[in-house]
Image (cartoon, rainbow, N blue to C red; front, side, top):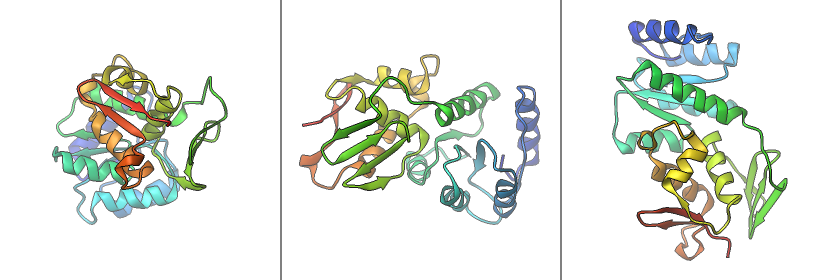
Length: 222
């Protein structure tokens, strides 16, 4: 966990420790990367307001090294801040102040996504110029690999295994985040926008993921 507030570090370290997590801490961006390189953790909790560097720079540095799940902790709750962090590769965004139970839920979801094996579908799925290698958790367009975070991958895989089918917001959040997780805790449209940005061209006629207003989304294969 990376945060410059000692009280928050102690509280999170203590509470996660009670649930059998080992928590290493850092109070600066420089220290965070040193600990990350040394420990290679399963997950990173990252505050954006660090005293030496912007937390987003730490996120960029982590993403250059690996796809380790990163949950952002921030006092800023604007949608723009969330979009920027998610676009840079964060897997989730939690606004301060937060409850321990919600933090634990976000941690479990992020770890579950990172460890989730592929099941029940062909090893390689193709939709025009887009190819999904389910076993290797890779997607490419015209042979160029597209980097997706674990959550983005789970969302795209859900669409790809239900081609041309209308998936409601509730169906999507249940499948990707779990039925016990509140749908309003996630900005589903933000994740869909990120997928579109990575998978679609500026040509609106080549829209891959179509919005059904007030209902949900579908992956169009024609």
